[in-house]
Image 1 (cartoon, rainbow, N blue to C red):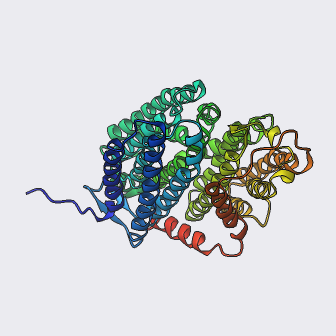
Image 2: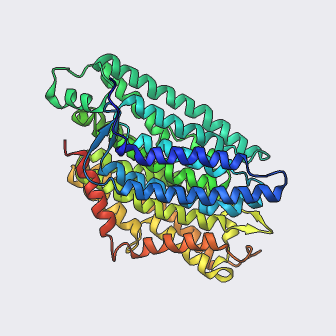
Image 3: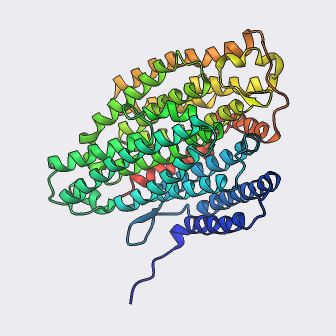
Length: 490
């Protein structure tokens, strides 16, 4: 008789999948023959999606004990998965909160929008808990297919359609590289399971590391680097960020990026942790290149969404420093950085969504001129996020970078730490240019008032996290420490 798998470790995912199917049925049977009814259906499903994500986060937090594996060792729930999933669920829920006003104004209020975000989130959670290269690929594709559709969700806008198509074509290429890498690993190691691979490469087995396995790791690294938009696989990011609807860009820059970085850490530290000498230099190069390009390419940008795209490439470079360090301190630093990055980015995008003139979105940095005089509270929020991204103490962004640089120095990666500090100085230029625009320029044509309640609440909450982190950092520090320790427990 077949053994019934233990479903407890996967309860949040099963709950999310059931909720998605229920919401799809509910959405389909809503009356939406007029635009007004369509907006009502969209609001209802958005509200239910946010509740679903919050309940899923509570379910995840109940699993914070030890390491649980199920589905024939293909799915794992450990403190690392719990920490990463909670960040992803918070990011996805906030992305739905800040998007409702935008999708109603731009005739995008269809109930499928928030369901696609929840679907992508389910894929991300499966990725984070993958304990096998096949499970990893299934989760990755579930996420990617939803993201391709959301990128092109604004059907009447050619930029949005172009963004979706670019993302789809390049994403398919990256998935192919990842699969090819996985097939090489399977061909040369004889297994796709992370635990068995870890035993083989930690000296527990007799398998010597031949060139095929190195090639496999390189292809997997390339596929993952695309997903986190790290140089040299970043080319899609500025175009997709600029072309996609702004709330979609906000979502892309937060939840999928955190999930992909968590996956990056799990794959490199788990199965290939014993081969750190083989892949460390690749990650060091990717990290350096991402920081340098992110800092210098953003200097000439006049569109704030493109600037945020290059900024996010730079942030990925900083996050990868922790992985390059290869130890528990490095992973802890990256996980702290991801939590702070979530607050900074979602807050900054909530501010960008407030940039409207005559009920039309404006995206130029010059449009922020005089914001300090016309919208003092919004300007204060934006400036807090920009200062934090620039890494100015005592804001959270400074501490995020500090933990990562300390991990690099501890691992002896002095050159990487120096490049990180220097690129932070360069990047501060374009963040401070926005501050200068907000407070020291005269407003030509002020932005619309007032700021919607949803956006105001998200900006206030994210701002408080950034400002008060240095007063009470314990929850994030403890969560990140437990998550990092669980990866190295074996």
